[in-house]
Amino acid sequence: MAFVNDNYLKLKAGYLFPEIGRRVSKYASDNPTAKIIRLGIGDVTEPLPSAIIDAMHRATDEMGKRETFRGYGPEQGYDFLRNAIAKNDFTSRQANVSPDEIFVSDGSKCDTGNILDIFGSENVIAVTDPVYPVYVDTNVMAGRTGAADESGRYARLVYLPVTAENDFTPSLPDRKVDLLYLCYPNNPTGTVATRATLKKFVDYAKANDAIIFFDAAYEAYITDPSIPHSIYEIEGARDVAIEFRSFSKTAGFTGTRCAFTVVPKGLAAKSANGESVDLHSLWNRRHTTKFNGVSYIIQRGAEAVYSETGRTQVRSMIDFYLENAAILCRGLKAAGLVVHGGVNAPYVWLKTPGGMTSWQFFDHLLGKAHLVGTPGSGFGAAGEGYFRLSAFNSRANIEEAVSRITSLLR
Ligand SMILES: *Cc1c(COP(=O)(O)O)cnc(C)c1O
Image (cartoon, rainbow, N blue to C red; front, side):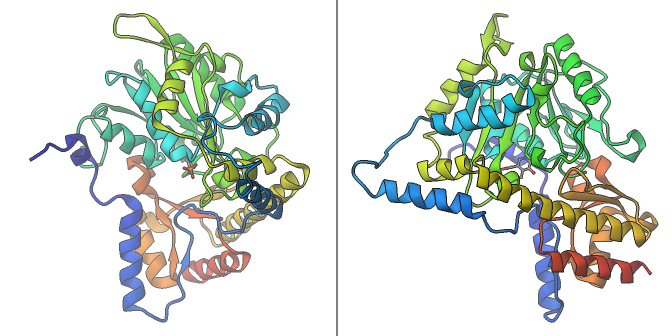
């Protein structure tokens, strides 16, 4: 018999979303008349704006004609898209990122996992707690974590708690770490990092020769003009940070698939013999070896996000979700709950009432109000006692959800 990758056996059983799915299916089959509203998994619900669909139609027609047909494109992405990204997402915010530092891909989930390919297994890794589970699980698979204890914490990971007690602002690691994941606006807490917080982490990374993985999947939801959208808005970040961006939540591409990773030229880490190695070339090597590019049609769709019409349409879609989040926040507060997030992010992070655990509140909400959310403890030990609701839904469902929670807590 061949051998498996034993690291996979260290993954905590019952990954969060399958467990939620199991409980919801059981409840639905036991209670077939219950009208269940799902505010659990973070997936968008609004259709793609017409500017994007039109661009993809045009690109599809090009693929059907000999003169304009395209085969393999550049693995790193077409220039038209890399140029549009550099100009609109970075140059316009005084963040210095050039088109050839942008690697277009089919998703940030894969990029945040794949990036580990170019880093050595001896790195010490820090994550926030709670955290987007992908960062942890991909490190487990890559053999970087050791085994998990009862609370699900892995021996070799460094956890930075983010709770109401520290105003959801992680402290710096109390020891030297090499790789550090930050996600802002944050999934799951819906909170943001100020310029000062990001500066603190950039300075730490500089002082400790660490690399920050900055996941900005929700940057388009930032409403507060003082909050940075990119870590490269912070002085010195080019020397210490890799940034992940995705069109999934910012333009409704969860089913269409397009994202990108920024690896600044000059960013470096060291080899086993202590030599400085350029990470941009290493990632370029990895990307071009293991990836063959995003479909031309999809890249034309992504380019249209930056057109005048596209921008307006995407903005109104984001505003729609943000209004949903505002309705959730207002309604839950009026119902007596303590809520966080939901202002610069499509997630509302609430404190479970009456000292319930996250899973107790999940079962309570499902059983009594037919609402599905995500237990905070599924995102990490420090998420215990919290609960995530997503603003990705129809207005009618959001309003119905608020009214059910209000009745439930009355
Ligand atoms: C949704 C999400 C992403 C985007 O993933 P894609 O693979 O690009 O769809 C990345 N990071 C976080 C934290 C997310 O919630």
